[in-house]
Amino acid sequence: MLSTLAIDCGGGGIKATVLDESGTMRVQPIRVQTPYPFSTELFIETLANLAARLPKADRCTVGIPGMIRHGVVVTTPHYVTKDGPRSLALPELIEQWSGFDARTALSEKLGIPVKVINDAEMHGAGVVAGSGLEVVLTLGTGLGYALFDGGVLSPHLELSAAPVRFQLTYDTYIGEIERRKLGDVFWSRRVRKLIDGLRPVFVWDRLYLGGGNSRKIRPDVVEVLGDDVVIVPNSAALVGGVRAWTLTKHTDNS
Image (cartoon, rainbow, N blue to C red; front, side, top):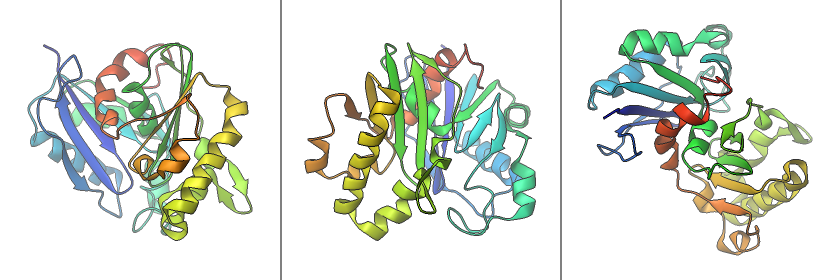
């Protein structure tokens, strides 16, 4: 039976597990804190160390924040910083990560086929129904985004980098630092405003809200988000490691 090593890379932590063909976890996920400064060499070693602690898998799926094209990192917002999200970006790390062929490097290190995609796309692969226009927004360190049409992943857009107001992008407008600053009540209202603003842009059939902060949206706000909005568990990101191999094949975003 084909097994998949799924690794979800976040700004604060990196989680991994091994799943069977049905998406059932063979072992409980393990997690390590994302180390900073995070060079590409340390990235490979960190993921290899996680893999060594888990059962041997036939293939691997990795979700990374940022713009990923064909397994190559175009930009990544957190891993180029000195001390983590919102800290000083280091020129040497920007240079390392820009154009970094993560798929090839990981495949050579792990000795198995590897698919590398945006982390929100991996999350989306674990939850979409496969019909209609489905949008995935992940709420965590920043804002993640993925779009599926008829179950097929569309080319990635860095929605998080778009300006919202003043000097704020979607990433900073709705991210973890703003949530802590505002508190869950006012932050939840901001989430509602975000959704109301994006609904006429996408005209989605279904919107999925995932990521660690999705469960922090206040109940009164959840009630008024609409029947077209579904909050999904953060564990779906790892389950998406299996489905990503079929849902992304037409765009070859790996």
